[in-house]
Image 1 (cartoon, one colour):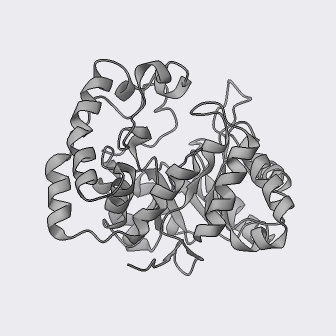
Image 2 (image 1 turned 135 degrees about the vertical axis):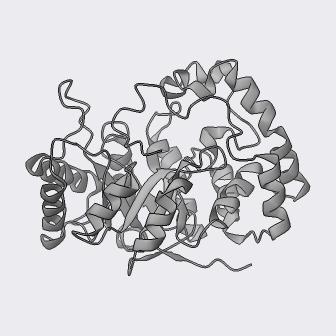
Length: 334
């Protein structure tokens, strides 16, 4: 099966169906280093994977800096190859205002992002979290101004409700919506999948392998102890962790019977949900990266999809996808 590239939004650039979630270029899921991240980026070029997704807060600039050093080392070959998306709007330096969508703040953050990446413009800029104190009209004006200034080519949103997406799109075309989406987290099917299809926006799916649950080697409790995010995440606390690992065993067995890794099958399932879905898994392993990329070459039959839904039906996961503090800033709509 040949790989068919997909648009990153209406009239947007064509990108490989599988992208790179560059949160893994920071220490979010455990210690990493520049060499590991550069190895992933080199493997991406070799595999034709050109969709690269990062954010200013991943490692407080670490992810963007690592990408920037790779682009500088590789030169125009890499700069012209990658379609780069980044995000702004979360302020980790403020205790009073953790989300900031003010124009001056976002413009300064974007300039810092461009400096770290070593580029004059990026293809897509997301509002990482909506700051409800800033009217949507003012925010769209800021983002449209960034396009006019030639610093971004399009914009999108992360973790917003379908109503917000439609309201934003009524003011200016929105290229993409980014939300958690996988066999273990399917909330986007209750409105955001439909809204993105209706508006022609890409549905960019982060954590497509369920933060490791949908892989052949789910995180164990001892590893999670060293992962601050998962350590407080309900799905990765006992008894939920053991229940989720047990629940996904048949999925791993089904993937093995099909001759592929569980992570390959998990991403292939996503690609079969709709043509505008773009998974962006993250990894620090080149071997695992190659497993993920193989998903773009997998053709699943209706029978395969029905079997997967029977193994992991809607609502199978134990525990909420976020803790109370992790829900902060995410627009809940169902």
